[in-house]
Image (tube, rainbow, N blue to C red; front, side):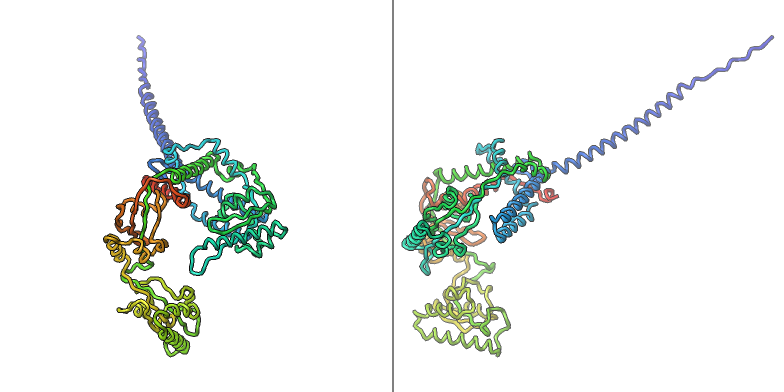
Length: 578
C-alpha cells in the first residue's frame, strides 16, 4: 500500500500586509499633518509679518485707522516734496533768481523740516484724516479732475517776476506809535513826486536811491524775483505787478501800513512744465495712487479752510463788545510784591556790564561810585518836579545799561528774587514812595543811581482786587484798564471792540461769551497771566472790515483747534517711526 504525503497547509499573510500598510498610512498621515501644520505656521507667520509691516495701526481718528503703509507712503511723499523744493531753490539760485544768502536761508528751513519729518508726518496724517471727516460733514468733495489739475500745477515751475520797488514810509513823531494823517499825506506826496521824475526820464534806480526808505534803496529798489503768492510784498502792489509788461510801472499805491509804494516790472521768467514729474515720483519709490491721495488731502484742507473763512467773515453771528484787563504773570514763578524802578549804571572802568567781584578798593570801582554819587547829588539839587526828566536824560547819556538807558533807565516790574541781592534790598525797602531817589547802590555789575517808580502786589492778588473795584457801583472799567492793565490795549481802556466767534484764542473767547453782560467776568487764569473782562453789549452782526482782517488769519486755526479737541485721536509714534 502506497502512502500519500499529507499536503502542507499554507497560511495567508494578507492580515500582516494590511497591518503594515495601515501603519505606514498613519505614519504618512502624521507626517503630512505635521508638514501641513508647519507650512500653515510659516504661512501664518509670514501673514502676520506682512500684516504687521503693512496694516499695523499707527494712529486712529474717530475710529478711522491710519496704517503703517499709509504712514510710510506719506513719509516718502513728504521727503520727495522736500527734495523737489530743494532742487528748485538751487535752480533758482543758478539762474540768478535767488541770492546765495536767500538760498541758504531756504535750504536751512528745508533741513529743519527733514529733521522733524518722523513725528510731523504722523501729525499731518491725523490732520488729513480729521479734515477729511469734517469736509464730508460740510459737503466738501474733491474730484479726480481736481487732483489732475493740481498734479499739473505741481509739475509746473511757477512764473517768476523780477521787480524793483520804491517805498516811502511816513514819519512817526518821537514818542508816538503811529503816523498822523499829515505824515501819511507827506509820504504819498513824496512818492507822487518820485513817479513824476521816473515818467519824466529819470532812472528808476536813481530815484529809488534818493527817495526810498526801504533797505533795498541802496540797490536801486531791486527786490529780486517774486512769485504771485509772495508774502513779503504788499498784496495790492504784488497783484498789480503781475498785470504789467516788462518795464511797466504801477501808480503810487498806499498800503494798509501807510507806506506809499511804486513798483516796476523788470523781466518775466515764464512758467515751465516738467514732463518727467510722474516718473520722478515713481523713481522716489512713491506710488502715484498714494501721491494722488496726498494731493486730495491738500485740496480738502484748502477747500475746508475757504469755507470756514467764508462762514466766519460773511455770515452774521452773535458777537460781543468787550473790554479787558490783563495782569501779566511775569517771568518769575515766585509770588510776592513787584517793584518798578529806573536806574543809571556806572561800571568799573566804564566797561560793558558784566558780573564781577563786589566793589572794593579797586580804582575802577571807586571811580564808578564817585560818578554815581555825583549824578545823585545833581539830581537831588533839582526841584522834585524836574528830577524825573533829568534822570531820564542822564540815563540816556551815562548809563552803561544801554538797553534801559535808551528808555530813560526804565526797567520792567520785578519781584525781589529776580534782582541782584543788594539792588533788591534797596528797592524793596519799606516806606519808599514814587519819585524817591536811591543810591548809590552797589551790585555785582557796578554802582546804580535809582529812581523809585512804584510797588504793587503779586499778580494773583492784584487781579482779585481789580475785580472787586470793577464790580463796585459807578466803577470806570476803562480807567482801571488804563492804570493797571499790562496789555497793549491798555491805552484805549482795554477796548477790544466787537468779538466774533473764532476771532480770538479759544480760552479767552470762551470766558468772554460766558461772562454776564454789564458786569465783570470771573477771573481767567492762563499760562501768561490773568484776565478780567467786561461785556458791554451783544448783537447778531456781520464782522466789520477790521474784524475780517483778523478773522482771515485766526478763524480757521481757532475753529479747527475746537474740532480737534472734540475728536478722539490715538496716535502711536513708536509704531509709526519703525
